[in-house]
Length: 318
Length: 286
Image 1 (tube, rainbow over the protein chains, first blue to last red):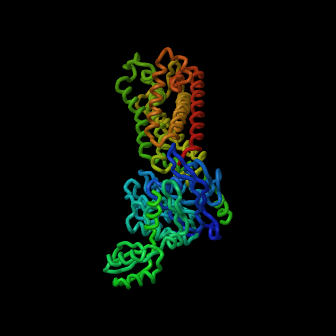
Image 2 (cartoon, chains in turn brown, yellow; image 1 turned 90 degrees about the vertical axis):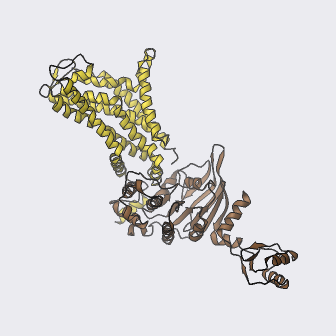
Image 3 (spheres, chains in turn brown, blue; image 1 turned 45 degrees about the vertical axis):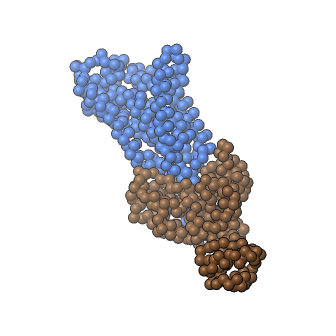
């Protein structure tokens, strides 16, 4: 365990304002299709950044350019302080699981990882220690000697995660890490991300599971058809999006009518009426309702969820 | 320990020796490699048994076609005949398979991405892959040669460990084995030319079958072109047109011009193939 969980020796990631990765004016076209259109994005050091977007929004293309797997049509990429032709020099400190796990079916999980370990610049001497530690970290020790051919989707995903965690990393990039995982596997990924964050590493996670991102991420970036819609700290984005009231009442029709007369639109919501942010403040709304004889059981401020934010952002633009 | 730590922290690529060793281990554990090597071992055995059954000293049909007929009662010719037969299809198939798996196969499994992200430098990657293919080429020829010598001596037999050349002279065991080794080395070079071209195709595709089709199709087209009399001027350009030169090792004195010119041609293919592979792999998306 020790080799894989100790803090990265070169981690100097906690200084404020430092970025683990940065792209500027990034653009990628495939023929006439624009996959990524002029994206600027910072991944702050020490952050867990969730990259969200519908299928085909360019998440994977962006990640591939960040890692130097695809050449940008235009724009610059900076990875752990390295840019241009020097980008690959950052890769020994970067662990990645991109576009699903890739392994050889005729080898066991352990032999596949040994092969990966042989290519890791940061490993020396006996490779079996780090490999077994990584297998244990993702809960694959029991299946380590079985052929990859017979692995379930979730086990394959776990092995891909193990390969990304073979050595202590400064940045870990996980493209749809919970794909095909059962609830226990999802929990394991969450635990691993938390461990990485505690060790000072930066995590870039792409997902379309919004609850997943909301649970583990400190930052989000939302992509839609190759354009970055919004990026920033998750809390701040949600707070900015919060607002309005939810009123619990059995007299829904009376409530809507009364509010309409007072110049405030409202709509039916579960157990009562939802009032979007408008000209009236909360006490005035309650006064209007009570004045109209509506039975008010409970009033609370609506808390924004990532799901609503995401839906609003992506549908607005669509 | 600190010195080791610092060196590791600044290292940007794994040692080439470890990469090559991992690659060779991977190649040799592939079931298809083992199947092809087994098939290659069967070539001299089948040839030897066939000759022992139908020929034999005195009763042989010595009017039969050239090389195979020369094996009758002359066991040390068997490895050379077997290498010549295998070079026409099975040996190229073996190295083409290795080359196809080396880049196109890795790309189709998604493992090429892992290697590029490790990172294995793109030029290093070609060196590592070439080491694997080279191992297969050498092993494949060695299997045919060694099994050929053993089968020749045991099954076919001969005039007490000597070789009767096509020119009618007799070579001692040492010189006969030297001739076998010469043909083996020459065959390896010809195979490396095929492998380098296959590797170049492999660098452009992620479908291993495309590589096999290109190599086998290419060999067949070369054969067709060589058979058209009006295209005789093409002959010096075709890799396969020098492939009869292996038989020269059975003449006494040894004529070198065919062996030398076919080796030169193979080296041109080899350099072109490796060059294109490196050029492409430095640009390829992972």
